Length: 147
Image (cartoon, rainbow, N blue to C red; front, top):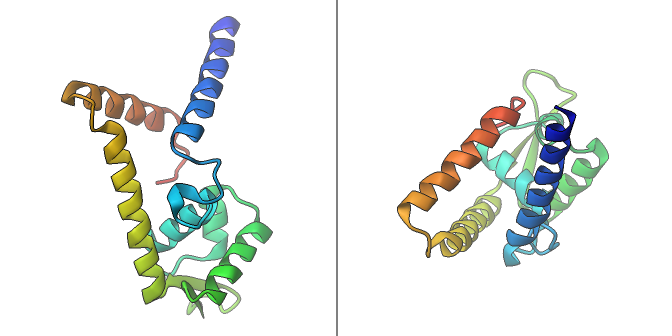
């Protein structure tokens, strides 16, 4: 049993090393967007959950509060997001994309879709289905409440 667990750990680590390079996660300029992977994910979460709090972003992405705060301040200076005091808790700000921010996110989605489409273009339908099944299996086994 311990051998299987150890092999599983090694296999997951090998896969992580592979896909972080394959999808360009290690590049600060993720997919040529000018944003890091973390910044891109934060923008996507704001896009998905208009009016999200910084605390919720930290919880969802398991990120340090001060790190998220710095990124949010930068986004606000760049006019990508805006903050408004919560109606429910005056100590909390709700974060939304501005029109400029929404355009940025749509551009990121297009870049990502294009690059992944190119990645799978040479694969047949059965292989695509197998990949989706494998990825969904991993999500089902390891999901801890995130989307």
